[in-house]
Every structure is written in C-alpha cells, then in structure tokens.
Image 1 (spheres, rainbow, N blue to C red):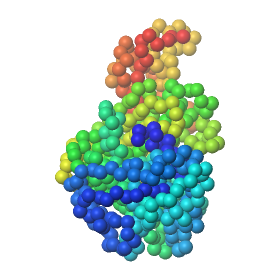
Image 2 (cartoon, one colour; image 1 turned 180 degrees about the vertical axis):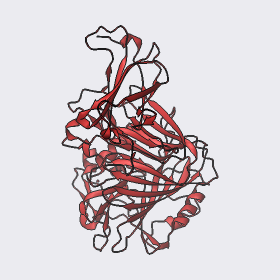
Image 3 (cartoon, rainbow, N blue to C red; image 1 turned 45 degrees about the horizontal axis):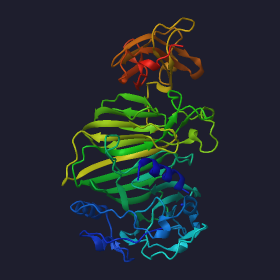
Image 4 (cartoon, one colour; image 1 turned 135 degrees about the horizontal axis):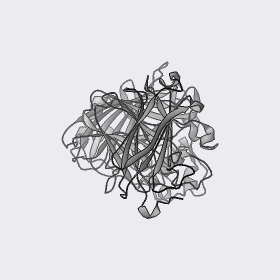
Length: 528
C-alpha cells in the first residue's frame, strides 16, 4: 500500500473484520495463539518475543481475508460500525473504554489484541455481535478466529469522542483538550524520503491493560514487525489539556537500517501564508501543521516553516542529543482557514521530548508535493548517525505531548508568528533583476518591552545568493516585530538555505528562523 492510499484510509476510517490467522513460524507461537487462556505478560517478555522473532524471516499476512471482506466497497466498509454497548470495560468502573476496528477493504493484515489484567493476558477473540452492519452486500460467514484492524480509546470525560486510535501499519494519533484529530505518529519510519520504496512497519499485536478503578492512565504494549526489524513498544497514555504519551522502544533489526526514523511524525501541508503553489481552493490555508520546531542539544531554538514544494524536499538538521522537536500548528485563528468542517485551526500540535542521550544524528524533514489535503505529505523524525545493525538491541524512550500548545517554548526569546513570501523589489520602481521577498513576524519574549526607536537588527545568512533591502521594524498589530529582506538567487535553481533572527547589540531576541528556498527556472522569473 502506498502512502497516499494508506493515509486517505486512516483519515476517513477513524469513524469504523477480520481475517483468519496464518500460523507463525517462530518459537513463541503458542504464547501468542488465539485461545482465551490467560498467560503471564510483561514488557520484558515482549522484548524477548521481539528479539526471538528477529532471528526469523519476515512473513506477511496481508490479504488473508475472506473474499467478501476484500471486495467491500468504501461505503460498505464504512457501514461496519462497532456497537458502543460492547466497548471493552464499559460495564466496569474504568475511566477508559476501548472500541475495535473491523478488518476489510484497505486493512487486510491481522492484528491480535489482548487484554491484560493483573499481569495476565488473554486474547480478545473476534465476535460478530460487536458490530452493526448496514451495507448493501452480505459479509457471509466469517471464520471464528478472525482478528481486528486496530482499536480506539475513549475517556470518562466524554465516552462519545475518541481519545486516541491505533489503526493501520504502525500509525497512531491522539487529541488534546479540543478533541480534534489532526496529524499522526508512527512507531518507526524506514527509508522515508529517499530513492526507492518506503517500508511501513506494522504493529501486529497489542496488549491493553485494564486500568484499576481510580487510575487515569492507560497502558498499551505493541509488537512491531517488518522485513527490516522487529520491535517491542510500551505506551503510557495520560489524558489532559495535552495528551501525554510516554513511549519506550526496543528495536531488533533483521537487516542493516541506514535510514531508520525514530519517533516519526506525519502531517499535511497543502497551502499556507508562505507557500501558495497550490492555490486553487477557496480556503486561504489548508494544513495540519505549519512548522517544525526544534530545541537543539546546545539549547538553540529553531523554527522551520513547512511548505508544499514542487518536488520532493529532504532536509537534515544535524545535532547531538536534541532536547525536543515537533510539528506544531501555531496559527490557531479560524479566519485564516475558514474551514467549519474539519477545523484546521483546532488541529493538535505534537512535541517529542527525548529521554536520555540519543547521541549524534539529525532531525530529518521530508516534504512531498501534494494537490490533495487527504495526503499526508510531511514527515519529521530523528535519524541516528550510525546505521542500526542486525543482531543488536536499540533502546529509545521519549514523551509525546498532543495539544494546542507545545509544553515548552523559548522563555526569553520571541517566536515566529508568520512567514510570508512574494516577489521582491521596491514599489513604484522598475525591477532590474529578479528577487524574492521574505516577511517574517516575531512576537513574545522581550520584544514587548522595546521602545519604537530601539536599534533592532535582522541578522540574515544564506548558503548562496545576495541579500538586499533588509529591515526590522515594530509591528503593533501583534505587539512584535517584522523582519523583511529580498534574496537575489543568481542563475542557479539549486535550493538556498536561509537563517534569520533578530538581535539587539549582540543579544538574540528571537528564535532562529530557518528556511529553504527553491528558485524558479530562469525562464519563469517574471519581473512584472
């Protein structure tokens, strides 16, 4: 399944049988069987299972569906709905409830789901009574050993709305206080944004711990499997204004992984203030996130506005043990989007906070061209400098924050509020050469304390080309400053990397704005 099909399915299916399970050809098959007997469970045991599984070749079970499920139309698949009265733990004092997704159509790989109670795990067997089906075509008699496609979590504050969902490959998503889905996360990214086919690892089994009465956290474990690696994952979900998810990861590569992506985030950017390449829609902005925020290991704050490039764009921001990164939706004004259906102004930001030392590597950003808002075209992740080798164990831990605002931000530094671009030059004067203008707005930090005559300087550096008409002036509308400059790219079409920040004397006043500009072909550089 390609990324486009997968992401269109994930976006629409978070509102929705099953398959016979082929035998596993590895040592612990009996311990993961579909019988209902309770078996001891722990994260240590799961890591042992993943380590053992990595010593055997990968076996795909995709497509092992009854014909009636494979041939379902989209409408008929959407007509399969989980019965809320059968939600897991609905008849208990648990603060959480679980609903299950049916397999079929695009979801054609088995997912085993287990319930863990007092350290003992039992399999949740397929039960057709869990679902209502209002489709036009009969499903037929389905095997008794069918599994599920995934699951969604609900919380006591509102059992009718999703708290989080795990569905498709290793994708999962969550909501903050605004209860609005947006971008997604993944367990692992492999070969994302490079030549060749991307590999999509999948969570093949889950273990859901029944929370004790009065507990407000939910524990989930998952087994990851793919041609290149296996993995054991432990999630702790803690709802609040920001949903906090603690993630522990143990990877056991089957083969060398040169392009492994840790804590990958997946989002969508079609059109916005700084990128109007696809501008045919009536809405002024369409995106789940508008920038990549980074806090380097040395303490530097960076903001990289997202874009929808004409060609695939891959950027690496090298670092050692980063303190955090995330895809954020800073612009939260409805009138900037005018979308009263999917509410892009309410989409959650996601901040990743590494635990421990991650060593050397890079935060990688992949931007893929798109003309469709159902296509998640933005991916960001941590890429270790050294390839992950087979036969080794690799441990990572991090905390994810899902919500309106990232939990950390520069304390004394102003942050980027908007990035706008357009043709450069001086109004009223004939243009003698092509240039591209950048207008970057900053607010917060110490900018609110500055007088109008303060000598604030815009510091701009570029990888090539010439910078001209640079300025920094107060912007009362946001109680901040606007920096502006023109970039003359020269005759080359190679991308240009740009850095900008504001300073007073030698003191930085803002985070660092980083950008990559791709000049148009010389023949298309109109001076108007």
